[in-house]
Length: 344
Ligand code: NDP
Picture 1 (cartoon, helix red, strand yellow):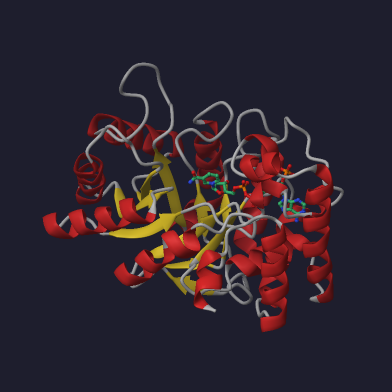
Picture 2: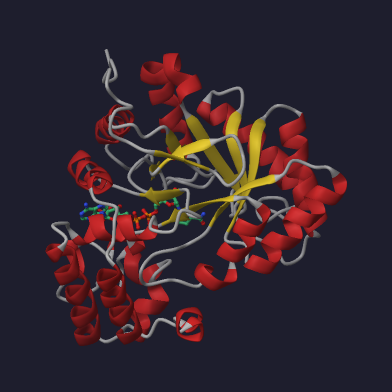
């Protein structure tokens, strides 16, 4: 029987999500990969136990996580019921709707029909009465924003979600969402979940000024660029079938030669070493250097990775020289730092 560490809240730090009442751990765990029906269930279970023991109170899911889609929610629900049910009130469980879940015109995007049906399915799969956070997973170019936001509000009013959030919305789409929700007195957008790491910095100028202005939190997903910012790719070789080459960081991978990638990643690794950290630890700490970022949302495939990543919280400070060196590496990496250069 799982008994959580009694001192689980001693090391982790928690940050408030914008101006809301909710606090998130500096590092949250996402279940996109390594928790699906095709994965080793006992390994997934061990990671969830260890995460909770180390003060991770926030677990992030989505309807489509698996594979197969839905199976990460089912597995999480099984582990929750067996081991963590007594601690439900210590947990922030999130899920999302936006990507393809079932055939036909109502199985993806942002219609009221899809969002409400998807939330009901997710509640059943996870065996919970409510989600702490429910997200619109991606902006829908064809559904009026009002309809998607009204659906989120309905979920909150029905008690199926405590807080509403959006993911991968641009700064402009986020600002529009906040204003529309305010005008209608709908559930506020408490948090935004964007892609953010040392190789992808768009939110610094496009989104963060907006989330700060409106008092919303930010949970940065893939702070390790889906594994690129770890010691796995230091030689620059990225298999074309790997997650790093096919999903979120694919543009960066495609735009750089093996030699450029080797130079940039090993340059960052050298800075990490001087800080006494692994590249993964420095990447997570870096994503949290701005207090406007509430939490870094990581993935892991083993307890060892999780422990390595959690050790980040021992050194979150950066000297101006370290930040400068990381920015120089970013410039070499072809990352647009125009905000920084226009400030100077
Ligand atoms: P990360 O950038 O944290 O990458 C995680 C991967 O990096 C792991 O699966 C593992 O790869 C590798 N890794 C992690 N720690 C280490 C380590 N210490 N040493 C070596 N390798 C390591 O994030 P993800 O891309 O997994 O995304 C994290 C979460 O963000 C998701 O689970 C999901 O909750 C959320 N997300 C949200 C999206 C959205 O649209 N809202 C989109 C994408 C993610 P390996 O498995 O190969 O070992």
